[in-house]
Structure formats: C-alpha cells, structure tokens
Image 1 (tube, rainbow, N blue to C red):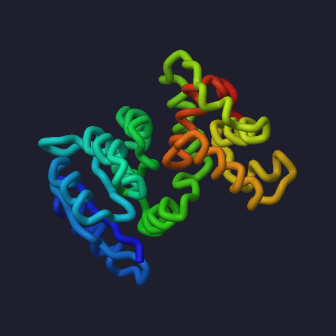
Image 2 (cartoon, rainbow, N blue to C red):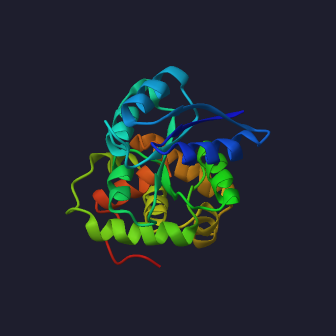
Image 3 (cartoon, rainbow, N blue to C red):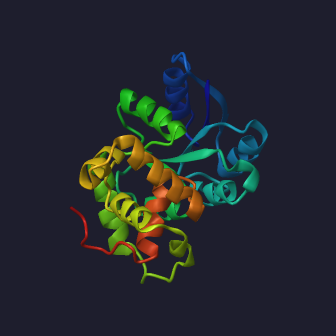
Length: 221
C-alpha cells in the first residue's frame, strides 16, 4: 500500500486529491496538512511514501518544508512531489535542488496524478520525457557556473556516460537504445550512479549532472 500525505492550504484541493487517491486499491491518504510546519510534523510522525507538497503555503512554504524533509536522514525514503499552478514555476527549480523528486501541476489529469505517485515510489522517472526536457532546458539556463564534483571520480566511464544521458532527459529505454544495451542494464547503471553520488532520485541526478559540469546547457537532443 502506497501511503500519501497531502500538504496544501486549500481544503478543496486536498479533498479532491483524497477522493481520487483513496479510491485506488493500492494507495491510501495517510494524512493532511494545511501549512508547511504542520506538513513537516506530519511527515516525521507518519513517514508516508510520497508527499504531495504545495509550493506556496503559510507559516512555512513548500520549499523550506521540502528542505527540512530531505535534509533529515531519518526521512530518506520519503519522496516529495511539488504541486504548482504553473508548469514552469520559478520555484520548481529550487525545489528540485532542495531534493524534491519532481513536480505536478494542480490541474493535472487524474490518471497522470496516479501514474506519478506510483512512478515516484517505484523510483522511475516521474515526468514524461517532453516535460522533463523542458524542465531541464530551463534549469540549465538558470544553473550556476559548474563546480568541481569530486564524486564523479567514483564513477566508471559508462556510469558517467549514463549520468550525462539522464542529464539531457533520456528515459531508461532511450538510454538503452543509445548505448545498445537492455533497459534493465540501463536502469542498473542509473541506480548504481545514484548510490555512488548519494542522489535521492533521478531528479537529483539531473541536478548533479549540470552542477558538476558533466552536462552543459545546449546539449539537449
């Protein structure tokens, strides 16, 4: 059973999400929160698998709440998905830097929301390749000058290659075709790379790919 916590200051939004999620045989809503402070307390108490976190909330916004969750070693297994009104919200990029696993727009289709919750728990790419590439392109444009990343020295040449392909938005299947390997092999390389670099998930691997200079703006495609 996938346990989800809803953090949003709009009760109607929470009610709509709860009705959809609780109707699924493999998903249950573990709790709700109306502000960031309440969300952090609930996450520490309930340890949900996924948090649907609104970016803009009173007392403590979603960015700060996400940072508290992702910096807590006891909450490593909790995946945070940001909720936003706009697909390319300026705060989304900071949220991913802070450890969020991805984002969803609030008016996303019900099937897409359910797919996203299941995907992030499974460790798969949360966003469709098209949305991922738009997000990465915008992230690249906003990224700072690459900093030296000692962690890259831990990677094999193939793992660096795979990380670069993740960085430009390729799915495991696309990576497999590019490298002429099986999708399972591609997924294994991605998983090992994440473990070596201490990346929480695929979104963090994208951030590291850009911030280390392994991938540079303009390398999409």
